[in-house]
Length: 332
Picture 1 (cartoon, rainbow, N blue to C red):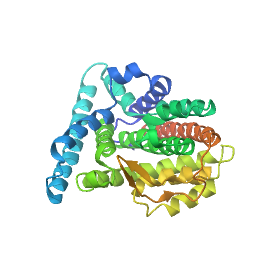
Picture 2 (cartoon, rainbow, N blue to C red; picture 1 turned 60 degrees about the vertical axis):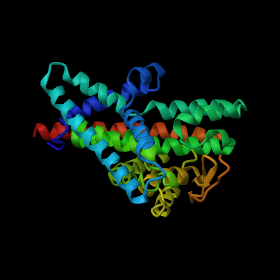
Picture 3 (cartoon, one colour; picture 1 turned 45 degrees about the vertical axis):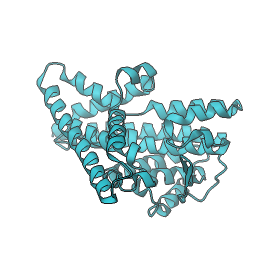
Picture 4 (cartoon, one colour; picture 1 turned 60 degrees about the horizontal axis):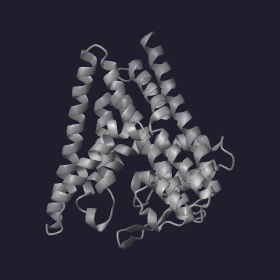
């Protein structure tokens, strides 16, 4: 069996079903209230721990130690929870339904597409304020300060990151280690959303969280880059070769491995993403990702939507191909 920890064909079938379910109703508000995503739950816990433990009157070494214990503790808890749920799912009748439910809420497919669509509609209607509100679920930038071009860049940048972190990475770690891998990544992603930014407040408290995200995310980032580059060949105005050059140039970016899918999209669309960001009253000067246009337009967002849906279909095909391969191995 190629995937000894995950349940082989059954796990990959559940993964495909979860993708289909999320593509249909994944961004429903009632669903988020009724059953929050695992990464969101870990982000909420991390935010509370940050308020209690990351105090500015503590020394840098103390804040680094507390941040390390927070990140490692939550990831360990998530892995143990995943192992327990896997045992329950394989021990009780209809346990696969429980596993499917967890997987369904851990994979994000519809949200980036829906957010980009709402943002594009607001921009084309000339309503910048509505566009800022629409793009908010896809970015952690301070949306009130974004102009037309900034809104488009935030949407495209967020799409690349959520494709890699919300779809590819969960699928990858679930395929390898089942629910333990899935929830382990969800914890890493959720913790990094809160304290993973390299800004003064989180420079020490979030140091381990950033390292965990970069290390655990590396294989998934490469898979995401591959899917995006392949998708560029099927999208009008997509530049796959420019995407390859962008990925090569981004290897030393401060974001580390997280910059790779963003760099691929920046090259494909001939844009400059990332760059300076506002954190409260302070402007954090980060290097741009890509050497294209910073003045992104609404039409770039339309191309990004096409790129996203084709890349998502490619990932689904990869999962189905893996399922066929495992099935063939089981029967030979």
